[in-house]
Image (tube, rainbow, N blue to C red; front, top):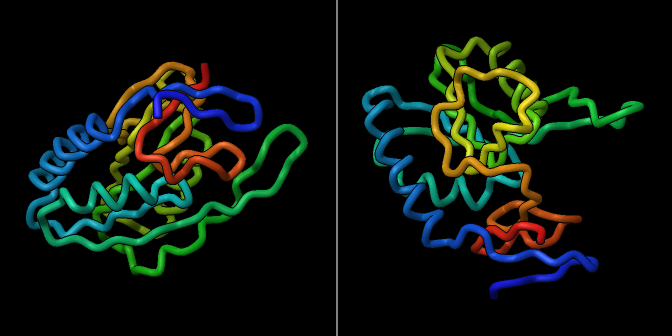
Amino acid sequence: MRQIEIDGLTFERFIDYEQIQKRIRLIGIDISMKYEGKNPVFVGVLNGCFMFMADLMKEIHIPCELSFVKLASYQGTEQSQINQLFGVGIDLTGRDVVIVEDIVDSGNSLKHTIAALEELNVASIAVCALLLKPDCLQYEFDNIMYVGFEIDKEFVVGYGLDYKGQCRNLADIYKHK
């Protein structure tokens, strides 16, 4: 499938599954070396991270634990305000945590995820993002350590990323034409 259409919008294939897998293998090697002997906890941010997290964990070859969180938000006057993190389920006190994100865009949700995890007295926080939009970041982060692909201000779907709940199941990543 080179193109898909959703609600009258056309998307073209942007990053194919094979490219994604190659990059994930390299990230997995890097993380496995850095955290050898540390037993890190990987915290995936749902819903978008599920495909990336599943493939990434197959490439991590050290003892580790994993958990998933979901951000709860309410609609403010201008934008969604994030107010709570649900689902950690593991005592993270003194643990090295790797946040797994599908995409870091403005950085708003990442900022709140990091703040919520810091309140749990973790030893360290690193961020592993499949996609990063550096030109869209509204905050500075010194802990985004692993990035699959840097992209421009693209509107993307597939490989866990959705548009109106659709396309998360696609193996490739597509961008709006």
